[in-house]
Amino acid sequence: MNGSVNKVILIGNLGKDPEVRKLESGALLARFSLATSEQYTDKLSGKRIENTDWHDIVVWRGLAEVSEKFLKKGMKVYVEGKLKKRAWKDKEGQQRYNVDVVADALTILSKMEPKEKTIHSYASDNVNKITSKIEDLDDQTDDSLPF
Image (tube, rainbow, N blue to C red; front, top):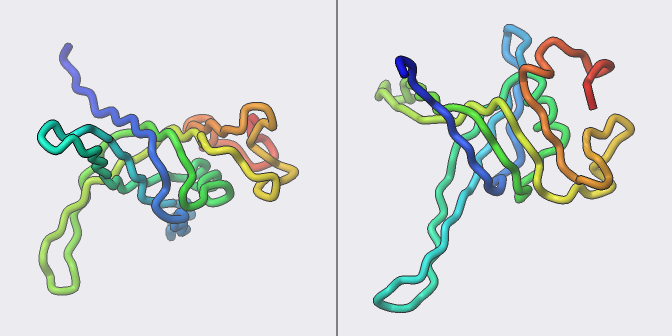
């Protein structure tokens, strides 16, 4: 294999509602934090331990629209994407870095509340989940969404 792989799969809960903004180019960008947890029993104390990690998730365009419409703090979601390191200078001029998960697929695993559903609902009443891929949404308008 000559190439490389940059693939991330996470299942966790949103730490806050997505922050959505429209860039000067017109592209829509959404950011949210995702908590993943693991539990184990400490062998010495016998106590149950839970560790939580926080991940910064970034979604673009059509997937950002779906995130804005449907994602809420606390919801359980499946995210698939890649790691992307970004750099910036803070107010004091210090170089700062962050690693984001740039998602290209998102599935809502939480049960959708009836008040969250609209006439253009992307959720199936029987399945109660949403699956969206950027490549499916990039060139489509709201009138031609496949779901």
